Image (cartoon, rainbow, N blue to C red; front, side, top):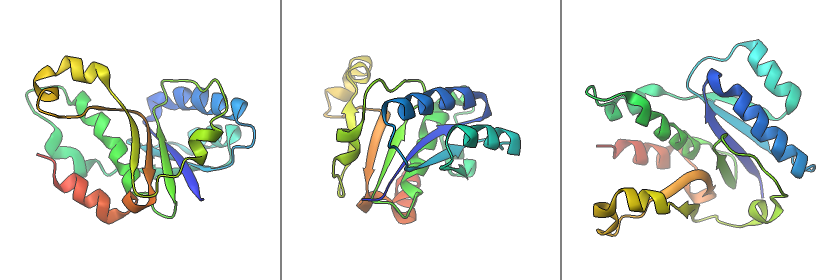
Length: 171
């Protein structure tokens, strides 16, 4: 099964990515997947080289910010739009599974069982109990909140068509 991992960052979060990947490698010494860095700002060659000195299999893909413009409310700060950028992971093709990780955490044990899970026709995530409590009116209406800090996207959802369908349905 060909897999990749991925995270969304901008140049301000390179140190976070380094910390996360260092912990991933420390507890998973045989890890050798591609690691796609979805980024919302340009990275210098020096920044890319710095990351590649930690792990050679980093791949860099710039996020098309135009796909998210309609999510920006001019009356609010656009900090919430940043959370949607990880949807670009659905447009990563050529893998059977893409594992998406936030970089504000550390790995403290081997992830073999996670990486060996098959989910060709599904998206795996964890129920977000805090989101449910913060928005009881939606939760009461059978809305499910998913904590997207760790996601696993199966092959049938990894295509530019799936990504286009998702972003075209933003309100």
